[in-house]
Image (cartoon, each protein chain N blue to C red):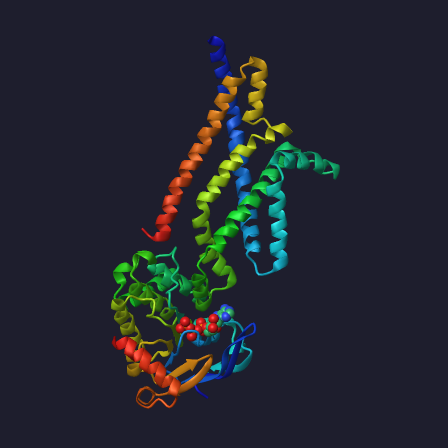
Length: 221
Length: 246
Ligand SMILES: Nc1ncnc2c1ncn2[C@@H]1O[C@H](COP(=O)(O)OP(=O)(O)OP(=O)(O)O)[C@@H](O)[C@H]1O
Ligand SMILES: [Mg+2]
């Protein structure tokens, strides 16, 4: 019993050290991924076929490659070209590029569902293309896709558990170290699973709240 | 030269010939009403004026002495406003911001100035108390009045209306027509696609009947209703007047 307790306190310590890294990786990767998604989504909705084609290839590649494979590719691949960026940058690049592909799809879908009439009204009022994007298209698209974007953030949280393979001390990796020391894999990984669950639960709840709010704003109450 | 003039305007949607040698004109403060069966090219014509229908394949349009094709888009759009059948209000903005934002973005007015102008217009159409609600909270007639305010706030020299009342429940048509009536009385130059023949009879300087992309007949309302020259016009009028009476 005391063994389990000491295992638990070990695990607790590792959560305290590892969780901030998970959150940081998620946070730091989310915004570049969103940036890629906005750019990709706009290009994928453009009238130029070549652009749509290129974005299509990008999305296709990243959606069809296991994320783990992709981390290895970046981690072992870049040094082959004389680029050594270390594990943290590797993780952020891999997470951003991979989730950027999913966000491209989310934003392309959001743009596709927009009301053409409002865009025409903006043209008829004299808005420039840039003003239409900034004032009409993007706010409406973002509002409509916020829930999906937070859903994507949850997937980023879960994918951070895979970057342990390149030696980043986030909780999954720390967990394995504790298991080696204590030989209590079930207890340790149960606690870790609970931790991931808690983080994702918070995001999920936020997504729900925002979804309701976005719907209210869009429907105007 | 007339204030607005379309001369032999042709327009194609790929191989489909949507406007065929359309020639129409109006003077300042005039109201030109365009009617015709569905698919006759009414929307295409007024959308061609502010470049929402693609380039002309022939002919020319002029406005206030200038060739419309050469007018920079921003000048054209700030001088010629448009009101749509389905209102097209910005759903994520309040009524006040729907009217204020375009003034700030396109005319460079300050926020305070734009809001003051928006409030004044809302008061004029009896919707001041709706300033802070979102479009979906309004009835169709109210939304269309807001859309008219949004266009008016840009101080346009001419307004285009594409069937402004045909998406409305019958009991709301009157309130929108009333606003348009007041606009016409204040000297606004307007091109109005509508099948409200009462409105046309009362306010139009000229009525044009379009069919298959062609102007079949154009005449001042008295003549248009009393002595239509073309058989097709007569047929159309008897159908539509019968429908509106019933
Ligand atoms: N973007 C487009 N591409 C191809 N064809 C089009 C396009 N817009 C309109 N058309 C065609 O051009 C013709 C004229 O359309 P338009 O919308 O101008 O008719 P309308 O007189 O306004 O009809 P309604 O009373 O139904 O509004 C129709 O046959 C329509 O199908
Ligand atoms: Mg039409």
